[in-house]
Image 1 (cartoon, chains in turn yellow, orange):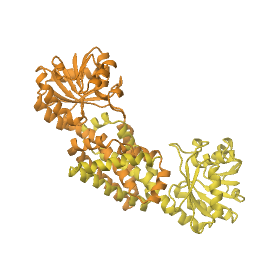
Image 2: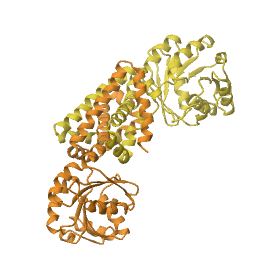
Image 3: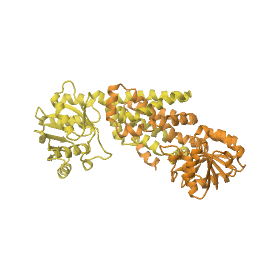
Image 4: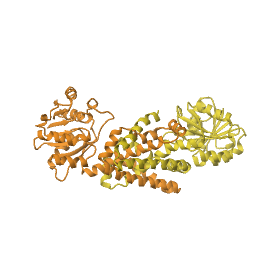
Length: 278
Length: 278
């Protein structure tokens, strides 16, 4: 297939490496000439440049820009595309993107390959980044089923595992497993930092793996955290309210010294977690 | 020194291994004959038996039973001790234990070596388990300073790092770094498990390291979780209330779309976490 990739960072670059290795013809677009050169040198693209006209014969275009630039990028490329071209993105939130971008291009289908590293930028691009990872597609009722099949096929070429669901279910699920944990973990750090210095410095000395793990995602990239909250606000608030209720239930059990209730909650968690993570 | 260890599980056994290797004479007490045999075979104790009379010439006795058995064990051993014997424990909560046990034995000083593994029992005992770990002692104003020095010295023999503070500061600090994270993490699992099956099964497919780390301590041993809450109830509730307030602040920022506020909170966390964990 002729695949265009717009935005050559960690995700765009890694997609290019794997698709080229499977025999697809990859055109890489970046705003910066130096990035295009790196893309060619690293074997990320067969052809690379800054001009959207290069996408004229692409069968699939994958927008790999930051989430806030996806719609504006699509507006800029549509004058250059042939009408059958499938456009997809890699944003970590789907509902607002699908809503806006389906209006801009009827053959738009949202996508989310669930892989990454702590690094970013084209130099962080890796082969086999998506091996075994979920790759979610969120077509609407109006999407052409053939187009969904074509996207699933190029996801399989990455050795990723394609999943198809609606955008709201996707956004709910990622709120539970990714966006909510960030806010839960951030609140732990924030609360802890308010403790008076004497206790805080002992806590610091005593902190080990339990605190380390529970506070990890709350100490991550602030821009990313704000972006999640901004774009997935509704679903994140929904899961936060549910979290608040469940926290209150645990607090009540401790306040009322209902140890049997607390024990049942914790035992259920211990049983469910390994199943959940398998 | 002549050291008695009462309760030969992971902690008691590991203490015995290291103290013997430093030339201390260790007497190991267990309720079970078979455990005493293992203690001798594994080099955990120089002498081992079920009779508290064996503690008659011990200079230091370390109670390594589960937290709920510490005070009753001390009641049973005191008739056999010489008056100068220092008694300490290894319980993970100090205030209630120090309060009760200081009444039972005037030379009692609370202790908490902060190391462990996921395993338990004498067969899990390890050499060098306490290397580099904090070992907290919580004397009262009435404690003999010489006794504190003797305990610090045997902690150093484990290559542990002794810290001396009052029991309340200890319990506050461990609530922040150990007990609160368990409840925060347990609430996440509990809330998530209430989601309807369709979304939950997608969440399950998509869950990766972020969810895994944030939910880890909330999926641990329920008996241990209840024990923390029971014995450190007051300090745990204090940190839970503070956590609730901080969570509400983050929720409010998201509700009101005050992205700058959220950004400041997350940026502060990112900066503080590495310092905190160093």
